[in-house]
Image 1 (cartoon, rainbow, N blue to C red):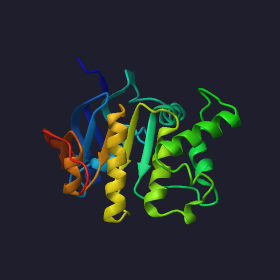
Image 2: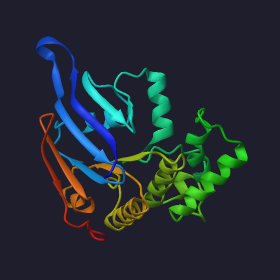
Image 3: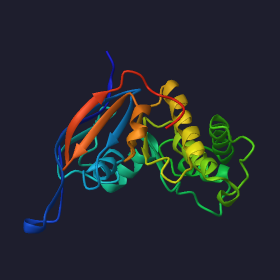
Image 4: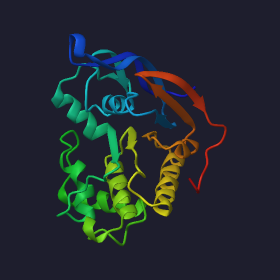
Length: 239
């Protein structure tokens, strides 16, 4: 029987108070098994970004519980959440979020340098960052800065950075949003490869064509899950 990596029960998130309160999430229940590839979709204002922030331990719920890899992280302090983010969660953003003055390898090293839970020497950090870049096909671009890389290559660096700490889960927020069609297809193929190797991936997107690339598609509307469907077969290649 598959193990649940994520268990969410009756999750709510409310911004503001009284008449101006905004209920971004309304009693969300969700389980994600280890090794799943899940897409979260929904229109603007549906709550998908709020849910992603909570899944990524960037925010805490107003009520309800969030258990990540058997640990209840719902009420952890900001410092403890930061530790969870660094050790267990890999982030891939639409805008890459690379530091422009650093080379690819130094960008990928950053999560290792902040990992106080399992400190590594500088040489070990460098070796792991190089290995991560090689795993995404950028072994020949390790000393290039972001401005010297294409959009697709920058996103590969971001994926390598997300992988370097061997996280429990990868959260991809519109990972192809700034890419052309060819680069988007390459990034999606890479995500498939990582999933085939056992990675757990949760991808947020507004593009219906990307839904076919996941095993499971969750639709949000008005802060609630309105459908949770499994694809019969994942699709590779063209969007």
